[in-house]
Amino acid sequence: MYNFEYYTPTFIEFGKKSEEKVAQLIKAQNCKKVLIHYGGHSAKKSGLIDKIEKLLTEENIPYVELGGVVPNPRLSLVYKGIELAKKENVDFILAVGGGSVIDSAKAIGYGIANEGDVWDFYAQKRVTDKCVPVGVVLTIAAAGSEMSNSSVITNDETGLKRSYHTEISRPRFAIMNPEFTMTLPEYQTACGCTDIMMHTMERYFTAGETMELTDKIAESVMQIVLKNAPILLEQPDNYEARAEVMWAGSLSHNGLTGCGIKNKDFATHMLEHELGGVYDVAHGAGLAAVWGSWARYVYKECLGRFKKFAINVMNVEEVGSDEEIALKGIEAMEKFYHSIGMPTSIKELGLDLTDADIEKLADQCCDACGGHKGSAKVLYREDIVKIYKM
Ligand code: NZQ
Ligand code: ZN
Picture 1 (cartoon, rainbow, N blue to C red):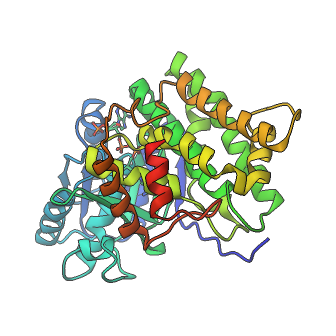
Picture 2: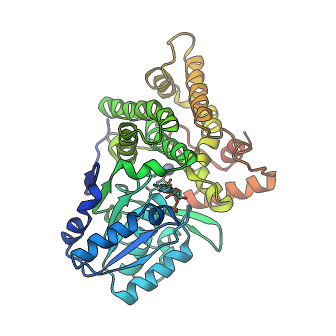
Picture 3: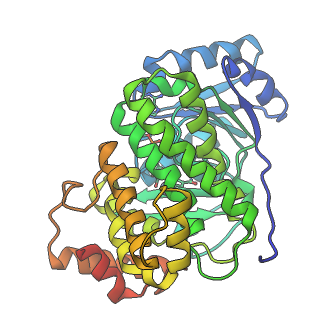
């Protein structure tokens, strides 16, 4: 077990009617003006934005609003948000939506608090410890951005999808009413469940020492998602299942399942981010499309972990060689992805990539990660090309 730091400053208001606390939670931030930031249609259509605006008005909290965030959130809207927020003297951002809206809000927060081009932080040209505070009303269980230190933005001019991490960007509060997620299309529910599995697996498949307690928490998070995802596809308004998955989403990416583990893998995320940036695929579906190939490529170098995963998470019988057991675990995971309508190859994701496309994606991956990525197995450019081709 390695030494670790664990920092989760986000106040969680979880459950039915939790959105009614929004004005009170914002007031506690002592801010002057709020930017309410949201996505395309869902939060408007459900009446959630109207409800929040009414609650803020009743408490005399001034606000402006900016909608229009799309999945794989765009830098151009971030620039627009920064301009608006500066003009209006905004000093708090309320993100109403999912990972894309929250990440866009964090980027606007960096942009208000710092001079110069906000993309510099994502392009790793400079760093900052300043970000205007963000609060969240979560409408989809998936990215975990409501408690994470991360923001992922796509530069719409270059097609580069890049992340930036700072502890200061962790949201001050997250309001999580599982009922909000009942309107999600099946596909988005499945994408979200995939992302939650992946955030846990990225920390689980690691070289080096681990911690038994962390392993057991991670295995439970994964089992909860494996159990509840199929329930949600049958019964989208099952409150208990929505709640289990929503909380799993936050725990999978707030650092808890990484305690005592030194090197997180995150290679599958890196492979997906390039697909998302260039081809605008849904994050969870992109992850499912590459995970199986990644797993088959690396499992022999991380055999103990893959065996443990197969037995403890996928309920594979402990019969046969370690390699056979590990492979059965990977097969079971792919079977699960198929069962919830997720792709397990780039072709199934709907992309027909040429060798030249793959070379370009691999170049971009190497550019993003400084030449190598991974823990289960450290991947270099040639490995990345092979996995994309698989
Ligand atoms: O725009 P609207 O109309 O709201 O529609 C959204 C969007 O089309 C819809 N949706 C959200 N809540 C809904 C709903 N539809 C009906 N009912 C509701 N209650 O769902 C679609 C997807 O939303 P999005 O925010 O893109 O989903 P998600 O939360 O999966 O976020 C994905 C983004 O987060 C990044 C991903 O790369 C991707 O860009 N990630 C962010 C991370 C972080 N900041 O820590 C970590 C992740 O690994 C991930 O990379
Ligand atoms: Zn993710």
